[in-house]
Length: 364
Image (cartoon, rainbow, N blue to C red; front, side, top):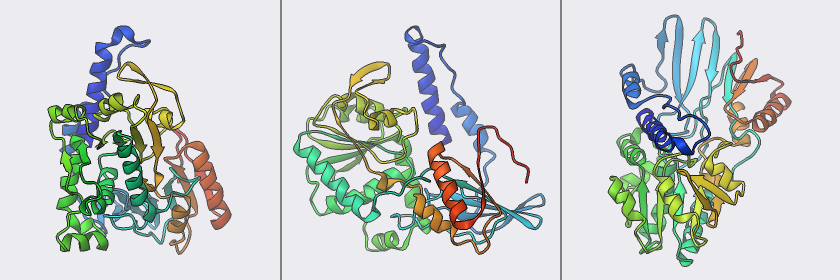
């Protein structure tokens, strides 16, 4: 992930350098490079879930957050006090991965609030809705472009399309995974079935690979990626980045955004200011790679694919605490989401809740 994000920033910096004369500000250097990422990775150490380790006088334990493969809740025992970081908290009953583990004790809790103001669409309905949307687009002669985060979202989309493809209901409709990191991530998923839930392990034991099906192809090279846009037949493209801020998905958007028969399906959180958010907000024209395009494609959103717990799911996770944390700090959420969740926590648990601001410090 570090190398991929560094690569995207290097590409963006080079693009700004080439088009400096058309810009209203000086080109920016990448925040960090692939070389920086490689040096950082030499400091990494792998640790198992649930096993305690020490950093000086602090005892630390990682628990499964159920968000993406390897995502972690951090419990830190400092003397007789416990500080817990929820990290990105996943959703219960998500395919492939296990549910988020519960924590029963903390003095302080740092809690995400991404969806603190709303609940997601029903999980069981999302596969059928995705399939119906694909069929509607194909019947119109268009393509389905799915900007998807390479880790987690891509694999879940493949999981949901799998039964329809294997039943022959997507016959003739190719599905391309066009993201080098998504391809690598899918391989890493295959290597770690110990992190899968029982349903997915059952599929694998019956000989069904939930991340592969007839008509699915990985676009490993740039040439293969470019060749997708030469296809005349309707097809599906799953490509990063998930918020349309860079990567190969931009090329597929450029080819389809002005086609009223095509569909652009957002399946993850779209942050303020991103291209994905602007399209969902109904903007009529967008700039992609310094070119202006009219938005004629069908723009859809399916938040049932979100890997972040919704408001009710967060509150249910909090109910596992035997003694509720004396202080909760909310982060990773836009202002309305954080304020709504803070009020719900105060109302139900009577806890002190602070919404963290940029550069703010707290003394514990």
